[in-house]
Image 1 (cartoon, helix red, strand yellow):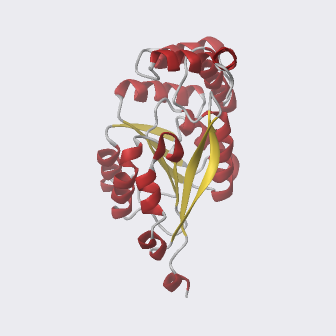
Image 2 (image 1 turned 45 degrees about the vertical axis):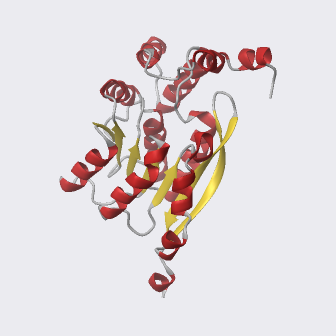
Length: 252
């Protein structure tokens, strides 16, 4: 790793975050919205690039960043989901990324929907505005509340009857619990994809042990890690990608 001076020069916002020990909930989220509005981005990729610039130059943001964005975009383009649910929406970076990729994968926006579940009402409000700036608020619906209460309500209201792609990006200690809730609701059908972020840094060892275990294999889940970088900083991490492909009895 670079020495401290070189590191701070290369990653100024991360250097400040490491010095202060603060990564969020200090007003930077509202400052990001003002930053975006002052630069008037004209399309989803411009919005994402503007957020990345803020995260590098102004204040570090706990968004997925450009390296993981490329990985996630490729997954969406390959899997072509129409219904995507993310647990932990933060400021809408990943929702904009997903919505843009879904539109491109399908050649249009007909029948596409993203539910972005966010606990913090201030973050949820900012995410809605960012989705609107990106021109994707007709696809992205930000739902305030805990992940469990929100997804349960969406299913009970029949707004969600199946989830093609589930993104886990909230508290790593809740990944296993909340996966089980979504699974019990019966919305993960054959071919469903679940992606969990930050499984190495800060880490989600219990979830990885669970999703790769014999029980899930017998139920038809395949799971593997995909290397990615936390940015700014280029710290090595992994995304856990899991897909319901069916058990041997299902295939017979």
